[in-house]
Length: 499
Image 1 (cartoon, rainbow, N blue to C red):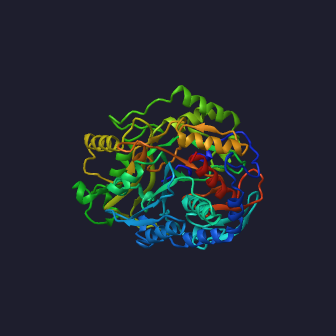
Image 2 (image 1 turned 180 degrees about the horizontal axis):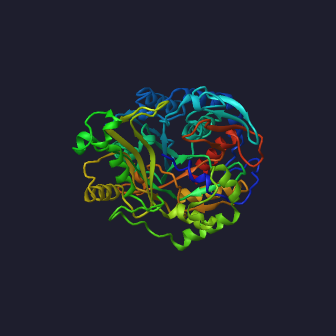
Image 3 (image 1 turned 90 degrees about the horizontal axis):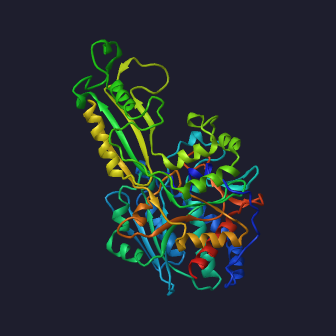
């Protein structure tokens, strides 16, 4: 999906910041833990490499239940007293608890699944080798599927727990961990994990839930996201047998002169969903997004003033924004607008050369991004009604996953603890209304739990969902932290949360 930390980092910018070499919670001597982090560096990096090699891809039914069992063992090794594999209607999740006997409890959200990959597209290193290579301007990075999304930052959080325990220190907070194996297919069964009675009861004791992340861009800038867009993942299928027109099996293309085409039928249906330029949703009675508040507009304006627009366009391989909007308006659109996006469109022959056929089936994979005041079920219902009203009721709408948007107040203790840790490190972060990507934070922020939720973690990585995904291990860039710096950021955050 995207994960919160994945997409909008390309759009978010803040003042150029130089990282202080270290910073510690004011009332706790963390020097022994920092020494333990350095001592255990190789061990922690090897742990991440092993995790990347244990691939789990929900979309391909690959690596299950091994992925869940591996995740549970990682939790036990890090000091969780219990870690249980929880079966769902789909892929299993993991529920783990660490009782430190402290006054405060914090929730952790992990995902142990990763996106699909085509090895032929990976140029710097194979996707499952977890190779460490030199990357100009950064230092040594680990290349692999899941390196930054999300195994790298999650492994750094686990390394922080190993270091605290290894230094003989008491954990500053109790922890409740939920890890799912279907995030990359829209978390269709997350409620079966999180709302299981014993899991729900444990989470109800938490002050909030956070997902380990990478908050630093190559220039050292840091973002604190206050939410994420929701998403619906679905497939639209047009077939001759369902339609009652066109062929029920693929036939010779010469017969198009007398037989309808399911492919054109799908294309005509898709064209009704958006405006002529494809940029505005035209689905009738579609749920309306909540307008940006004055506070949100102010956040965006501050970011737009410091962002290098030319560099951002270069990173995103684009020459202009929608409607040639200036930077600030383009960022406001990113934050405020829902989208209908075609992920893939397939019918008939797609291999080398031509094949004169009239396909009997055509399919389009879509994702619908949602912003506050929009609900997944309302969006799906409106889509189905819209298609039926326009003569496309035969087209199958197969929803494979998705969830509502999420939001947390910047005044929540979970978020203010991030601000405190970052400021001690010499960073004065700006807030960002919501990640343009998605993760199932709604399950924590919505009913019945109504918890604060967010992302945290220094360090850097990029390439989520793409070839040559990487996570920074040894930084030569003074503006960003390497692996050990990321680990220490989690140590400090946990101690700050425990105050």
